[in-house]
Length: 199
Image (cartoon, rainbow, N blue to C red):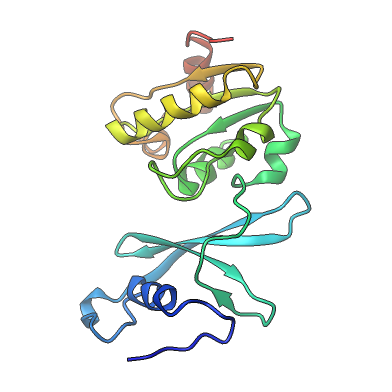
């Protein structure tokens, strides 16, 4: 079967996006994926660059707007930190693994960010540049890929940021689950302040 994208996407990219949504003919109806959440990645002025879309059953893909009001199912040409405008303005930024955790922290009054692609996505030089001079708190997911990701980021940002704190939250999968267990903002700040700081 052939597909054609009027925005110029490669056919393999279009097919992969359709498969991710369970809309390709070889996908059984039970495999169809509904969009569960959309996370906008914008530039410094708030202009939409691309979206990360989370599906159910759990999956993720990226898409960027075309000039016709539709979507190109490809990564954004320019990769940025999530909630970039807030990050730029904040003196203290928390870095977590996923957009859902960013939104959890925002709901509790903190400025947080992540990069698209999960634990194995590369941490790019422009991400470090955006954090230059700030206090950065890295919070890994409580698994091996999450901890390895945080170590990679810490190595990249040390020397560019004012200081780095690595905060591991035991007894939970991630910061969303930690707050879901009934922990408060005060307990969270206390945990941060108790950590050894690397300058």
